[in-house]
Length: 216
Image 1 (cartoon, rainbow, N blue to C red):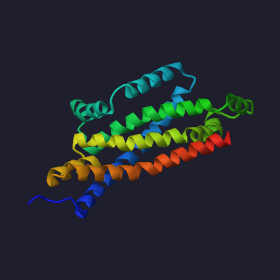
Image 2 (image 1 turned 120 degrees about the vertical axis):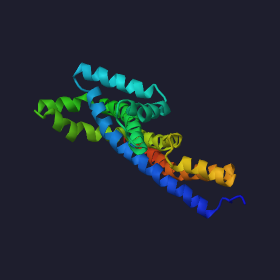
Image 3 (image 1 turned 45 degrees about the horizontal axis):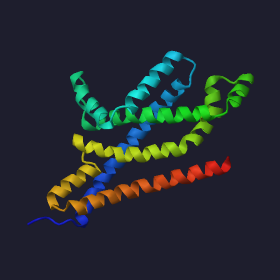
Image 4 (image 1 turned 135 degrees about the vertical axis):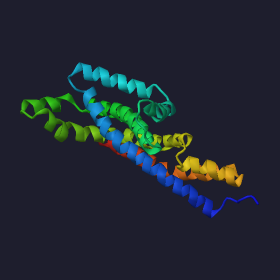
């Protein structure tokens, strides 16, 4: 007897969605910390660091995310580093995130008027306090809409984790479609769950952007 897609099967998809959200938050948190370092290096005075981080960004922006995940998952064991799927996915997605957020925040930092940094230097305020107290708060405010938009893309990008065997939302849908032989209903439910995860973030991004434009 063929199993029908019902409430129990939908709950199974929701359990997969939980891991999608967890993986997204892990990658965004770790990648955000790395991305801040990349942005600061890209806007710093040391030319070697600027060139190095620019190359780093180009590598991750110029190659498919799936290839990056494969490289981490299959490449690290060749170096003698055996990692489980969660660690590999977190590393791969965090590196990907750091490159994109680093570039977003680099543009945001450079969008802050130079006169404010010059005034801070004239007052004898050091680099660390100048960035923490003056530049970064304004830069993050400027870059917030683009940051949220990237988070939405990151959530959708975690669907690639299904190809490595992680039972997140998309993989849960694949398994349920194979069991019920009702792919249209199953993948429709998967799309609906992604929709309700991502649309509130998209709405927030658009609203913040409108407020910033109105403030200007």
